[in-house]
Length: 145
Image 1 (cartoon, rainbow, N blue to C red):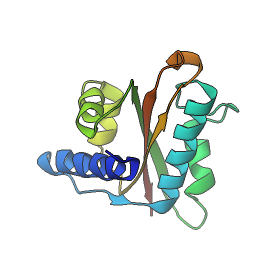
Image 2: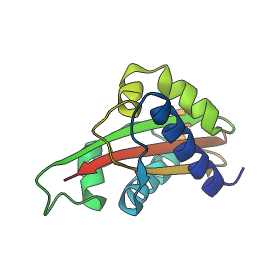
Image 3: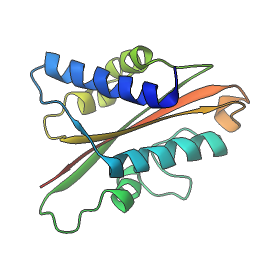
Image 4: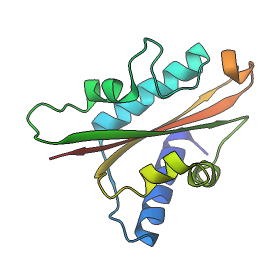
């Protein structure tokens, strides 16, 4: 599966799960897509796996660089991460997120309105990935009102 197709399938899977639990579907957001892509690429290139960025920024600080809070009275963000070797499907990502209480909480949060998703493949990911081929997915959740 191509990475754009995987991104679309993750979005569809998240929304099917939310709808099955009586929640509104999330709208894809270009700004959140960009935030997620930057983080997935950075983790794959530098060989780490964390919600914090390599420069020490907390996930919400990184997301805010793309998904601006200015002009809104309420702003919030959340993040789900997952990786697997050698490949990762949307179904596998969802199973891992559902089995993790903090990730499940993001999937089931009624406050989120938008989402950005970025899957990346790295042929020989360094660091925590042990030089293996990996797929890394970042899903950034957001709300602004």
